[in-house]
Amino acid sequence: MTSNILDQLIGNFLGFTDRYRRDCVLEPMLRLKLEHTLRVVADSRTITSGMNWPENEVCLAEAIGLFHDIARFPQFQKYRSFNDSKTIDHGDLGFQTLEKEKLLARVDDEERSLILSSVQYHNKRDLPPALTANEEKYLRLIRDADRLDIFFISWDSVQSGQIHDHPEIGLNIDFNGPPTDAVLDQFECEGTIDYRNMKSMADRFVLQLSWMHDLSYDSTKRLVRDRKILEKFIDVLPVKTDRLLNCFEKTAALLETV
Image 1 (tube, rainbow, N blue to C red):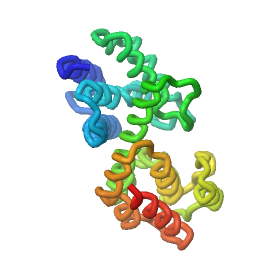
Image 2 (tube, rainbow, N blue to C red):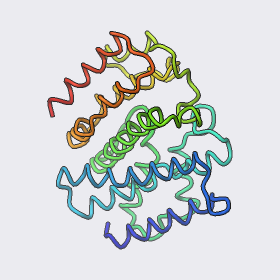
Image 3 (cartoon, rainbow, N blue to C red):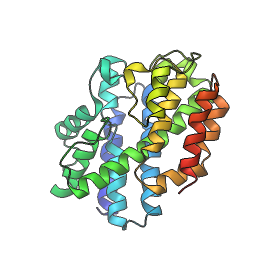
Image 4 (cartoon, rainbow, N blue to C red):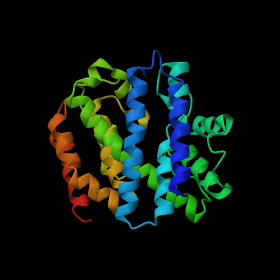
């Protein structure tokens, strides 16, 4: 993808999101998603540049970052929620939105297919089977970049108090509750965290620790370490238990290997 095509896509994206402004202003939860998207675009470039991807591939990675959460705007407008389990899968809706709005009209067929695939599957718990090598490469990249910024949002929303003003950020779970045994069990067994077991903010931090173990690229893991995400998480933990802190120690040991 050329930088000129990427610039056109940025214009398409901003034009689409401007439709959700009221008196030229996005409401707070949609502004959060816009800011998240722009950071994911920047992190997509940082991660891929750290792996020396060629510029055309870096631009394609940025385009995927640009559109990965496009569905959050119509989703929130209709349901007033970002909870996929109670509303609609935002990966699937993102695919549909890109097609319906023809936001990729100037993109060639191969790159368009990679963007659509990455958007549709970026939020799924597991990678879909039978991916091509290119599909898997870009899907793993957007999952890494997306999670990297979610780590930032989780910390920032707590330390700034924003999570109390907008509990939807934390999906309205118990902020001060202890970590759930079932969640800790799954983390310790290196299993996938079952969202249905999550009851507290501590559980959400454990979920994100599990994501750090599931990051695909060493470049992303180094960014987690260099940005001191674990230390920031510990600083704002609403509750600390020995078992919970052991999860942090296990994750820190993993990050030290890259």
